[in-house]
Structure formats: structure tokens, C-alpha cells
Amino acid sequence: MAADLKATPAVKKGSSTGTRKSKTTTVKDSQFRNFTPYKLKRGEAYMSEGQLAHLREILVNWRRELMEEVDRTVNYMQDDAANFPDPADRATQEEEFSIELRTRDRERKLIKKIDKTIELLDLEDYGYCDTCGIEIGLRRLEARPTANQCVDCKSLDEIRERQIHG
Ligand SMILES: [Zn+2]
Image: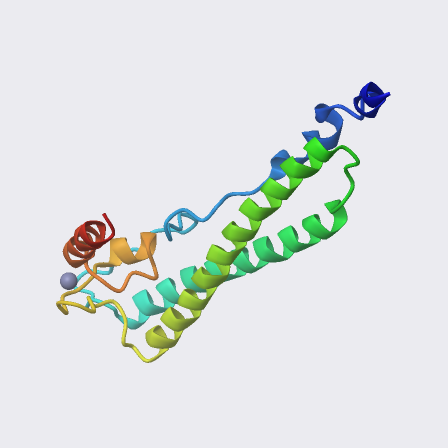
């Protein structure tokens, strides 16, 4: 009798979970690659109007992508919720959801950071290291438009952080 509980071979993995490989890119350390590198004019000053506009566009596009991503996950989770009669499948699903949620949480934080960066950029308080004041550099900003430290200060901070948190 007890054996019967397990007997029903519910829909096997492939059909229930096979459709979800479209699962999306995760946020990779504030990296953003989808841009055309800025062409510097001869003798162009650092953080010229052209560069600011260029970096602003990168930030705005990135923000839009993240927003779409967040919306898409919410929809996906609503459509998908509670469709698995098998407890094992449900557990897998819950785990996936919680991973998704953490990713979304990071994305939301990133969106906030992008907003703040755009604000600073509009005030032209952008492109210089918060810690030592030197130029962060156009190429670094293109790859990490939310960077507010130069490479050196950033690495130092990371080392310190690792020491504090073990
Ligand atoms: Zn610095």
C-alpha cells in the first residue's frame, strides 16, 4: 500500500523542466559589453561632452536591459508557479526560484546604482576616483560604467575586504 504512493511515474524531468533553458544571463560583476567603443578625437579632453553622452547612453541601455530582465522573470515565475505535482520537481522549482530571486535582487540593486551613477553623470561629477581623485579612464568606464574608483583603489579595497571578512 505504501508502495503505491511512489508508483505513479509523474511526468519525467525532460517535459517539465526542458523548456526553461532560456534562463537568462546573470549579472556579471557590473560588466557591460554591449557597446561601441568611443572614438576619441585628437586632443579631446577627458570626460568631454561627447564622452559623457556616450557613457550615459551605455548606462541607460544597460538599465533598460536589466528592467526587461526583471519583468521577464516575474512573468515567468507567475506562469510557472505550482505546476508540478511531483514534490521532487517542486523542490527543484523552488530552488530555481530562489536563485532567480537572488539574481533579481542583485539586479534591482544594480539598477539603483545605475540610477545614482546617471545622476552624478548629469552633475558632471563622474569619471574620477572617489578615493584618490584620479581619472578612472574612459575604457574602464565603458566596461564598468558604474565604477567610482580607479583600478588601484578598487583592488586595494577588495584586498582589505577579503582580510576583514576572511
Ligand atoms: Zn583611486
